[in-house]
Length: 221
Image 1 (cartoon, rainbow, N blue to C red):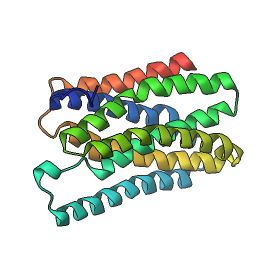
Image 2: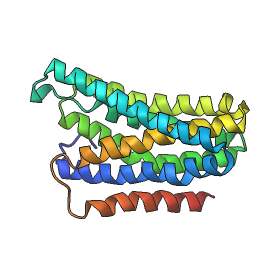
Image 3: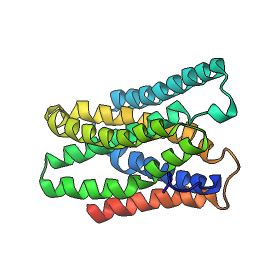
């Protein structure tokens, strides 16, 4: 849909607010609670800080490089940090699916269904934003392939490697991913959604994403 139609920024912004709510809920509902309850508290908190700092540093140097290149408005592309954050979210989703599959096939399939429903807005928003900001069609096509590659590689990694690691190490990694993702939401996704002014009641869409993911998690529990 994002490739076929030229959507106004208000539509993209609305979908981005919803997607941001979903990612925030993924952190709040699925990743951080077990890390805090069952992991070593100090390493978990430090890992959360490191994850957020990694995104801030990456976004800072990405912005510095873009400023030096001085692209024209037609050549401007979507934020590298924004795109990286979306791809990392898909990797994390794949890891969760892979780790769930180590328990039993039903759990893995349920998680895959839930992640598919909850992350559809992310692919839509990323392609639409990249198209609006002038990313060439070839690069957008490559980006769409990366959606599949990231989630499949994440699932393989979660199933084959993380499943055999100690619980402490896994929880620490989840905390680091949580710090990265929540910083993506606050420093990149929400500002991008509000770049040309918020749609009416934009906050409801963010809360709707939070609520939708929470309800989906309860339904699949």
